[in-house]
Amino acid sequence: MPVALAVFVVTVLAGCGAPPELSEPNALPTRTAAPTPPGASTAPATPQVTAPPPVAVTPTADAGLVATACRTGPTGQRVVQLLRGRAGVLPANVRVQVRTGPLCAADWQFTVLEVTGHEELQVVTRGKAAAPTLVTAGTDVCTIEVRATGPAGIRALACEAGPAARPGA
Image 1 (cartoon, rainbow, N blue to C red):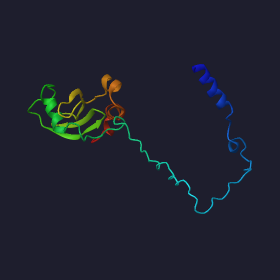
Image 2: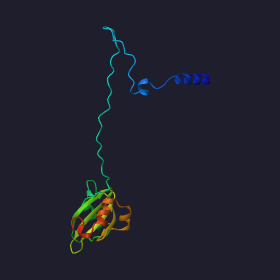
Image 3: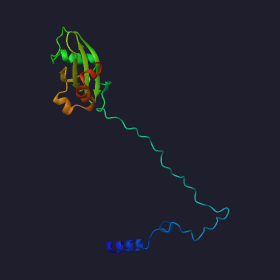
Image 4: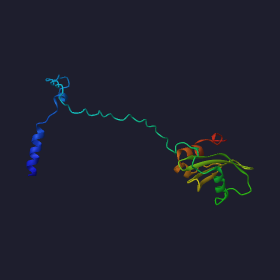
């Protein structure tokens, strides 16, 4: 039975070909339709379906390509607390002021601090705003970790810009 059904389907479909209007693009129609007599019912017109208008897609920049002011990153004061706390980079009695940042790229942050009586301190952190992790701090923060795994926006600030070209310098 299945073989007979398959043969029947193939035979029926073999007689089908491309419609004449597709195979002969320049051919004129050979018959015309008879006009519909008045009062004859016709099938209701189906609404014409149109494609929705194209939506303009604006590509968004990758969050790590450019470092911008942190919206959801840690505050400058949170970075200072990190350096004074467990990291032990800054003693409690030294005066510190946030000069630049934090600037965020992906989940990394770059901050520049003015430390009274010392050189400017650059800080690279990463992670959540409430609990950033110290990556490095010092006058040259272009470490192997920053170069190898940091997002482009942080690398540009920490490594590619000279000390005089850094934000706030």
